[in-house]
Structure formats: structure tokens, C-alpha cells
Image (cartoon, rainbow, N blue to C red; front, top):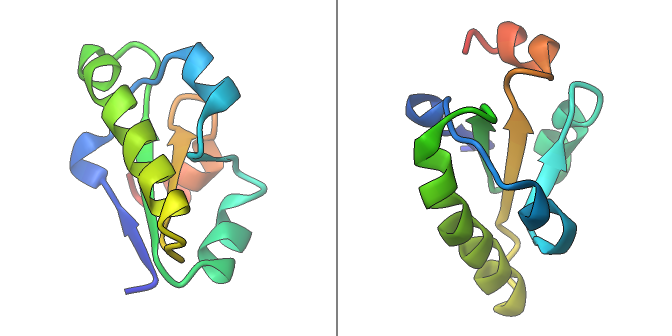
Length: 94
């Protein structure tokens, strides 16, 4: 599997402060295709800033990304704002 998207978790919001120090790769319309092509194993979360569930999940997602990085894993954890990056969302039928 080249890319895994958490389609069921489309509504995942992240705290802005987590972006500053996170090992989660932040994707945009212009970077998502390259990220998928460059990473054999990538987990992409599509989120929205208004979802309460994401605020609960965000720290765990950040910890998972850091743990993978520390262990030298080639797996990458990424996220994309589904309310802003409309091209990436619509082209993937999310």
C-alpha cells in the first residue's frame, strides 16, 4: 500500500501549537502528490479545524510521528487540512 488515508477520520482538527514542534508532515494541495510518491509508507489524516475529536487525537498522532522518527522508521505520518486544501480532498473523493 503506497498511501493510507484515514477517510473515516476526515474531521480531525489539530491544535495550531502542535504544528510548530510536531514531527507530523503537513501537506498541502501542492505537496501531497510528492509526499505520497516519496514515501513508501505514509499515513495521511484529513482533518478540519472545528472537530472536537481531533483535539483529543492530535497529541497521540504527534507522539506516534515522533516515535516513528526516533526509531528510524521509514513510515511517515502526515496531515492535511480538508477545509483549506480542497483540491487534494476533492481529487481523492473525500
